[in-house]
Image (cartoon, rainbow, N blue to C red; front, top):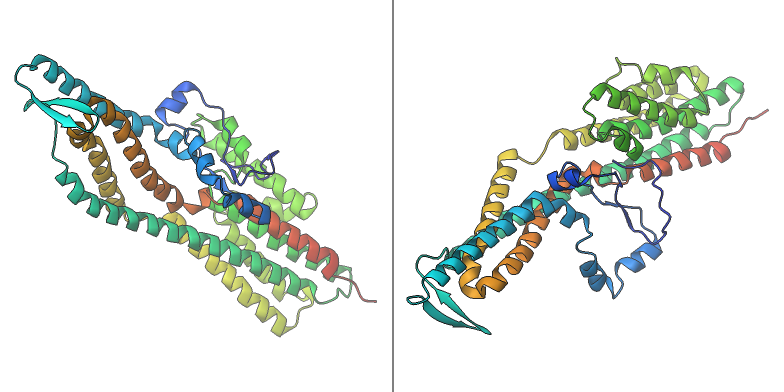
Length: 390
């Protein structure tokens, strides 16, 4: 749920989080979990990112962070409820068995312990924490590798589209027919970027569609809105209505990026563009690289990290966090168990949640900004790179 051009009034913002109206029930049920998206950085953003006050600023904004809001319900609520249950039961046991409870002196307070209390020794958590840390780090690193690969694909796409547009317009147009063919080819290059954005995301980076259809289960209505949004973008790319837009948006075209590449390949081989065999072959090689990027992005989209591994880590981590108060109570007493367990749970589950988010990188990358870069590059090349010779 992202806007094609997010309305960012504050230039100091380094990331963008979708703003969708949410009721209290939506917040509690977790139906909407916004994902912060890092925007394209410049030198000023990098300076703020490594400022000396970043740690204090991040701590102050912890409750407002996307990670906290995503984990609030049900994860933190359930684990805090487990901590409160352990504390309440143990305090009740201590109150009923004051005469035969064992007093223990801890740092700063005295604690009564009894064999009927819910508690565990800390050793099982110490031993299992090493294995938990290993599989959690592996999970996060694997997700990050997918994130880096997706960003590399889109960076390569930007470079290739610039190169293809430049090669197409590098030969001066000899007549109006050649000039129209060049403009069509460059428009197809820009169209590829737009349809890739819709091909890899559920909403095509359109927050207003998510707001309109939030909670709407009518898939056809949602699909019609996306088609209308894509049409509006393509009308801008092509400079008005064009017959190819209707062809591309027809229901029988399932893979729109592939259709654009096929159309662009046919155009480069046509006499209208005026390319010699060597230039056409070079452009064909670049189109083949775009097809490889399309296939690589589809592989990331359709192939998650092995599901049993993800599920087992989730079970292991959640049980570990829910059982943590059993070891904390004999060490911290009734007043320290709940807050310490909650903080440890937040950080442990937060690491896992970040790994889950970046596992699907196209939802956390600013694809609309990459498309804007390709559009501006194509427009610049078309404006200054083509001409007509008399």
